[in-house]
Image (cartoon, rainbow, N blue to C red; front, side, top):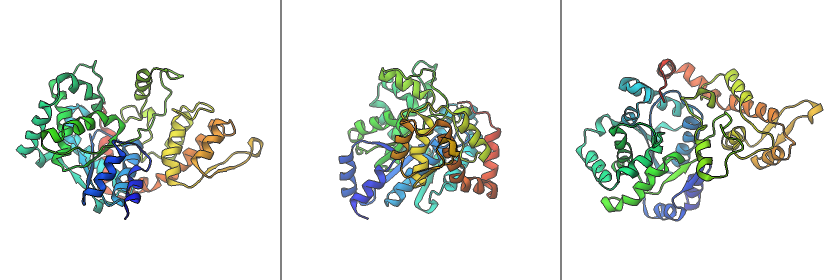
Length: 364
């Protein structure tokens, strides 16, 4: 596969950012077997963001011929008090995550799932953790805790300060050239970029993907003009398993999907920061070449939209009503997620892990 095609796959949406494109191109030209990874706190049910969006990038990297490592970061979940800090429950949730990506079509023979159990017996790993920690101030460690979904104002334990040094150490211990995580993990990856060569490793090339907006209306709307205030308002409503009303889970029933979509925030003519438009852009038009909008003749009849740009123009121009867009997106998601529902219905182990996380109390 030529360089341009590999770049195209890595940069393919939902990729939002690469630090930097030139560095990525140079890496692909100089490294014969580059390694990418993403790490996950196993912490409950799997929604479209953790499931579908991450699966897209796993598949893109695998297609580009890049080794992709998927880290089931049970210790990070334990440190972050996920699932009440129950380590056995966290391990079961990790297995559930693995089944979810396989159900979404991630090629199991082209990715590597990593568990921390044996990894953390390696003194070399902890040597790297300490090297990273020695390059960070406490103030920066606290600032980076956005990666763990924490605010600086929250009461934190000293264990929380281990989070970023461990995450950065993961990159180097796994031999990762491309940390491929969500935009909320940017601060940890920047630390890795800045100190990698200084502590005897390399400068990784982060690739960050888009975070889906939750289905609910932000507390402040219209969004504030101040960038920091806007970021905080949107962060509060990102799709989250701990806030089920914000999320569509990958194995939700058709009725659940349509009900959640029908109640979702979808301001008329607004295409920016609109969760239904977000779903159409990053999932529906990734999976489908067109979107069929079914509506009565008195409202203009059926509409066949051949691209996201065409849909966006119709919606922003008032030619596509929010209700009609919701119905079309809901129908598409029902079809797209059908293989996942089938997988969990037929795979006994997967079904058992789903039952466990559904019964668990989601603490964050």
